[in-house]
Image (cartoon, rainbow, N blue to C red; front, side, top):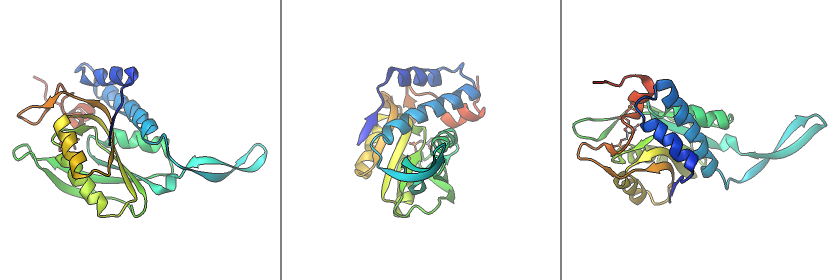
Length: 209
Ligand code: PRP
């Protein structure tokens, strides 16, 4: 299932990301805000568990999302602001990291770092701002599936129709929540209109002409 946020507020924030006058601080902050919107949608129908807490009246039990059974995983480095935002919301969730770099020549992703925690029987929320060819997502999902989670959800900011089709046709059981599905992928495998390279935009490594 692919769910695109159609909220005017989301569209406004995505336009801020496209705007090259948005500096790295604003870019990361906006990614974090959109991630919170994606989290809201993705977790809307979550089952709740009872948690015993101490209130002003003493010990009482209230509803919470079962955070202990959630892993938030990201693909370095562009996914870092999304991961920060997600674990700020779910403080009991554990975090996992995958280092994958898209080879500029072959356009295939290469795994160079794998630090996923125990995922068995848990819900894994995989966050990555961009789905271009879909190759990185497919490879990341494959690695996560080997850890036997009960469910995988992806949160993405922007994607091409082609890349999303690759991910959803490879893994029909994954729920994809995305802020914006753009027009296309160009011959250089860039999302059009897109927002540039989210990693470079976030961490000030953009080569400006
Ligand atoms: C970007 C992005 C995805 C990947 C998407 O990462 O964060 O992981 O490209 O492309 P794909 O769908 O064609 O696989 P990049 O390789 O630019 O690394 P970075 O996060 O370090 O900038």
